[in-house]
Image (cartoon, rainbow, N blue to C red):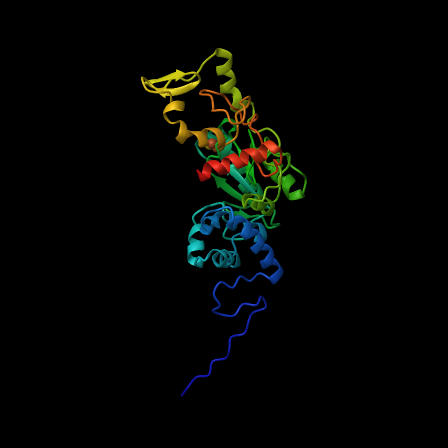
Length: 322
Ligand code: FES
């Protein structure tokens, strides 16, 4: 006896059971995301390299790496959903369930922990009634234990959507989360003057700059203390063994100066790649031992549309191709 199977019906999102890579986005949303994805993919020699920023793009749309976001990435990049999931589950910045408006991360790595990070963690878990990777009922805050954020000189550190809140106490951290839940603006200790939402932050991480990357102080007093002290005392790092200085450059002892011996090979990288240290002429070879503070660093984001910025990007592109 033969069994009659009905043709599967599409669900409200237009997906037919068994259909491969059905995204679940409505047409307008899918077209918008596909345009963004095309822009991201164009940045890479191999399209699949675009997966990491595209997962952030999905988070900017759905607030987490949703099943339909995984299917979307797979369809755009010619990958399987298993391959996309394998990447998404590897990194903690990709959320597997809907995230709160703000990710509040408490550093409980060694230095922050002994400086008060553990006490902050206990205070916030009790005050908010949530544990690691859990979200408050109002959807405002997802609380996380985080590892060292390279801000040990300001321990203990709390991050809100990856903006720094330095030298925190249980009381100050509780005040920050209370303000966030009440919709009252909070100001990070460094960087941008305010905190954006998780979705807005995710779009920036996808590579769509919001023009705020160079806002505010990059390196605070604690970070610069060693540099300033060395300058005051006239200290400098010792030379590498068997290396001598030749007119501001370094060359192997007894050999030709690096600038001569490797002139052709080194030229593109030395003259084109990366930002120019403060006080250095664009195109000049970097001076050995030259100091550069992030506070002096020239803007390198797409918001830098000056002629110098365009020229710097062109030199960087030329260096990559050579
Ligand atoms: S240990 Fe917390 S920022 Fe390094």
